[in-house]
Image 1 (cartoon, rainbow, N blue to C red):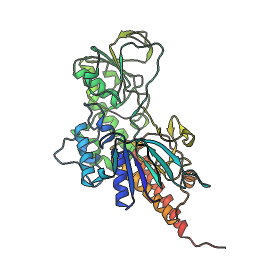
Image 2: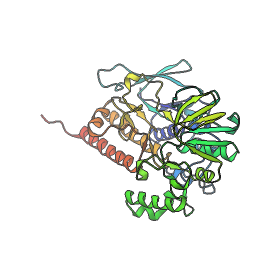
Image 3: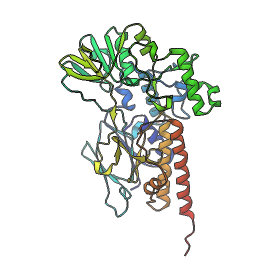
Image 4: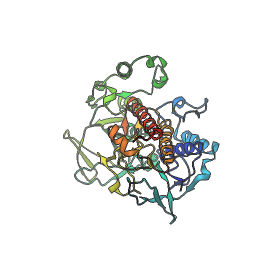
Length: 428
């Protein structure tokens, strides 16, 4: 038993397969849909990257130079399709097959130390040395509950495709993160009467400064992270103003960009200024088609779009094996290792701010280094336990990239220490 299982053929699954292939390790991949690309296959049509094409590809595999700075959903799908084709990854994938159950093999040691059985929707059960979980964290829709009942149409951002999904003409968007802003802009640009609920103020960051994506402003790298945050806030104030310039917009409840969720969208502000989008406060209750707000006002809507996030779900693993905080699995090892589980690697269940595809090969390579430690130990080397003693437990999905990169370096050092311990002579 030396084969590995990869769950999902999205961006994280593709990176996992390529890393395993480079390491000479055998694997099977299971993808419940009919193609590679993960959520990019089902995201809304108006979606574009908020990070530039120059920095968002896998390391060593840049996007074409003639692509736009912020590629569309279709172009991103093409990128992942081309990546899979270049390395012939599809031949390892069972498409249309979902993983139904992942169970640790019986062992006297830590959970997972003897390997895992994987049961799939085609009725098969196979045994694997380890499992790379790349099922994503943007698919299990989360909805906020409010008193009363809304009798119009409701759609979550995870199911929304285009304005063709909307019933009527009056739209309320609940949620003001990047997806919520995108949906509000999409409906406003298509002449729907659009309101958006913003309970917590944001620093709305432009995609570019001086026409250049922020990540490509080389001179910014000469400053510390804290100084970059200050400079960015000053440039935001110069280019888009403050919350006071946009009717109904609450003030940010955080002082720096680092302290709040990243919202990269200027078009929302543009359409607020043009009267196409209005800002609403929190929701008090529903009553038929009427939404009552916390400021005592109310308004009728035909469709509500929920942009309220997703659950971090592992539906194939019994919850007794998962330790959570705030609904998110607790992890160590740069968010690769769930607490208490060996040979079970989470690839992509974290979103360090900035481009996401470059994150996945880094995590996959850490997992391969853990596999090498197991192999050098003759089958098993405790890793989860030692890392839990050495590192803080991580429960965040949204995390500052410098913090995550520190976790990566600390994990590499810890794995190097474990490798040196294997070589140390045994003394009486």
